[in-house]
Image 1: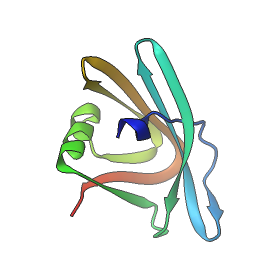
Image 2 (image 1 turned 60 degrees about the horizontal axis):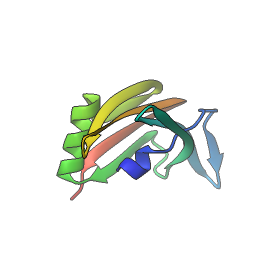
Image 3 (image 1 turned 60 degrees about the vertical axis):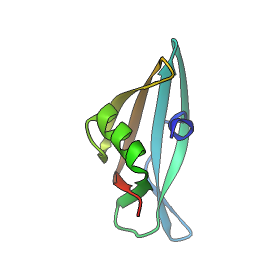
Length: 107
């Protein structure tokens, strides 16, 4: 999960690519005074504007604890704090696109 959260971006408008809408999501990770920011595209294969990401119960618990939620309604900004091996990471998710990203328990 940390690898996925170590990317971020500036959030331009959503766009359709080959009939699949993609949303822009900025993920910034700060640790030990250094920040990494990158851009990812989140595909919406269902076209509903709701993207469900199945994760393990442990990962779901970490996300919920860090952010206080496991459902992220964008546009908006969410900030959470994780600690791994005595290092604290601050993670910020940001998008100006309109979509919902929800983490769910994998079956």
